[in-house]
Length: 307
Figure 1 (cartoon, one colour):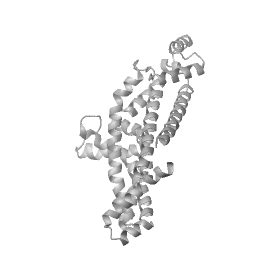
Figure 2 (cartoon, rainbow, N blue to C red):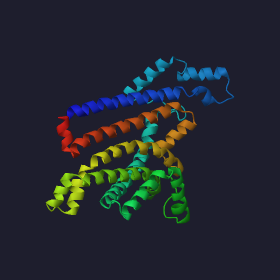
Figure 3 (cartoon, rainbow, N blue to C red):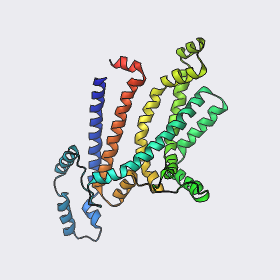
Figure 4 (cartoon, one colour):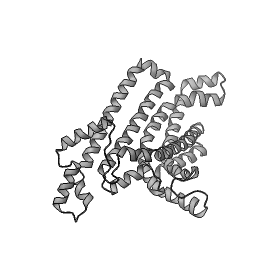
């Protein structure tokens, strides 16, 4: 187990390093940040002066190693737009994003796993077809369109829920529902396929022959043995939710990392955009490391194989 964790940790560090490098290259290859900050009316002398002040006139490899050195010290740089440490800005916004992501993921799991299990148990019936249609709708509908429809119906016409901003527990309902549709659909479809395959295994047939209850077969034996693929997609959905939160936060004016990233891009604040990418990748790597450890906790066969 320890060896597996160490290997996964090293792979996570390599993934983080690669993502940070790509973010640095993209940020520095998208144009002259000094010229974009000053605008088209700036003189070449003023642009050169700002480049020198920001350290952008140094060789690219020097800037890169300074950037990596800062990351190792926990320094994500200073925002060009807000003139504040990027880490401070991110820590102000990250609770809102975590709240939105956690509620959306909870909705996706609470709805998706029962839907997929029900579809597998009632395979080839009208229930299976209805749940498959719901999952297909969740995978097909654009998140921004769904968000606007939710605002129009539940905020404008019915007046049941707030239309946006982060003002109390009710304000998270609409953005979380909009954000949860895609992961809910994917979890439901994968649960159905995995559960249907598991219910056809010999140990399930043996359990029925021994007189085990239907609930015990489905929950204790079927659902647990089909949970590894679902756990995998669960970990991947963390990254999808963090990226999808950019659109949802923009639609609902939610003050999270997505909104901060949008403002950084619009304001040509490449250092802040880099910092948001680094934090997002770090969270994704940590979550997937936890998922890898949970594999062995859930399935003893994995522990024996790795041992």
